[in-house]
Length: 210
Image (tube, rainbow, N blue to C red):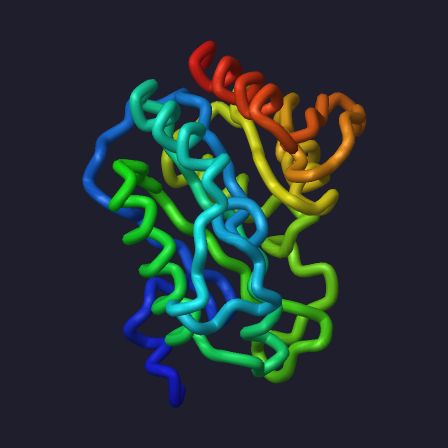
């Protein structure tokens, strides 16, 4: 492919699975699952330029707390811009590297990144309605659990869209945080808002209790 996809950690045309770093984890740990655009970094609407990436500061202490607890941090991100042809996996790789580098500068580390490039408005092999890996489907969370031996029920998820919360609920999680959202319960998943310092404090307490 023109964007050099063969060089990237693609386990299928529309699924990126990358293990970051060398930290070893014992089987049965919970994870901190994070959406990327709009959660870790400010969403610039299909971000494809590393120069545009700005971190959301509220997620830094959460990632740092998970790192200190020995809890794996896993990014699970829908990337429909790839399916739609707005940019390729090369642009995704550059943006993702920038996100990870900015986090590293603040001593915050991610352990795995999964990205779904499938979408019903995609073309060719990236076209797919209701693909199991695309949130709100739980496929990316389940795949991360398989690879890292995670305990999904004890895991936490943070995202900025209801689809993130639904993916967590369908994967068997019981707690989630919705950026700039409202508290609710979704079939066993308790959703807390993540808007201010008090809310961040609640998330940090949950991470420290894992």
